[in-house]
Amino acid sequence: QLQASGGGLVQAGGSLRLTCAASGRTAGISGIGWFRQIPGKEREFVAAMTWTGSRTLYADSVKGRFTISRDNTENTVALQMNSLKPEDTAVYYCATDDRALRPIGSMADERAYNSWGQGTQVTVSS
Image 1 (spheres, rainbow, N blue to C red):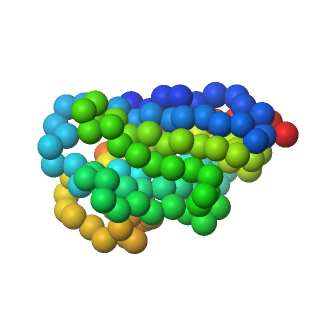
Image 2 (tube, rainbow, N blue to C red; image 1 turned 45 degrees about the horizontal axis):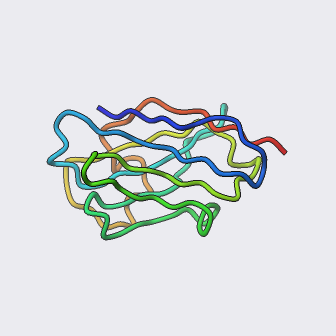
């Protein structure tokens, strides 16, 4: 199971830290990703990381502002979001995959994941 938290309301230029806690059978997880969705639009890739933390991938729109990281002892993955913009407003979802090791480039595709957490709302005011 995945539990995302940390969303909220922040002014443009501010920061938020989202956390995704993985529980239950985590030994087989190979990768984790963050996606976001605005009502009426398709879900959009944000960032991904291999479960070992050796490789990361970011959407161009967040590169240099967002950082994905993992706390090995707690089986949690964080998404540090800095310099937030109003266009970052969305519901953010974390997802994991335990089916196969995949090239990091493929982890931008939501089909690379087979477990999804509930979303957490991020609202950035201008």
